[in-house]
Length: 245
Image (cartoon, rainbow, N blue to C red; front, side):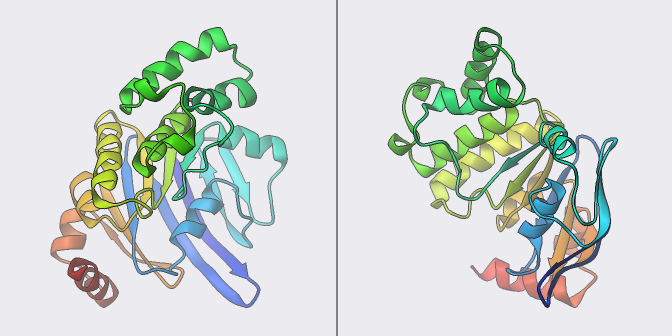
């Protein structure tokens, strides 16, 4: 479904990604963990075409991103197949909750409001936000805004959703609400790549855990291997620190 091959990315002299190889199958939940500054968010942004890369390739289904940049029409096609949920929500402040969820179907896909609105309301119901359909984002808590952002990502029927530390700006109760929605998506077979510091989520929900360190994948495997019998010192040291907090 998603295949990253020898992906390398530079910011000036800084080598942010160093030959990343990673495959995510349809219906798989892949958790990406590791120390800050390891390239996790940059990897997601390269997969979604938000950042160019200097070497390697990204394939989503039959669509490919090549080093140096991709044509805009191909990027549009890619983003209709991959949703993205950011750390800071990025809802449109001047639109209601319902209008935010409708933005992709109406603007990007050219669907009619009559067709898209019932589906958008169903999605809001799914994330527990149906009763807030007509309010603006400023009237919502952070956890509520993030749940709306997830509904908005789902509204374009993505084949996969990329989550970039979706709970790191939230307090523990709000984070729990959002992780609950994500767990439900996983049970329903939604393909996801989740960059997260929520170790319990990675351990409980992910099929595969990838540990990134200094722009490389230090180790990949099922949660029971990563958390119970890590093979690299990098992973052991990271998990030791993570479990202390």
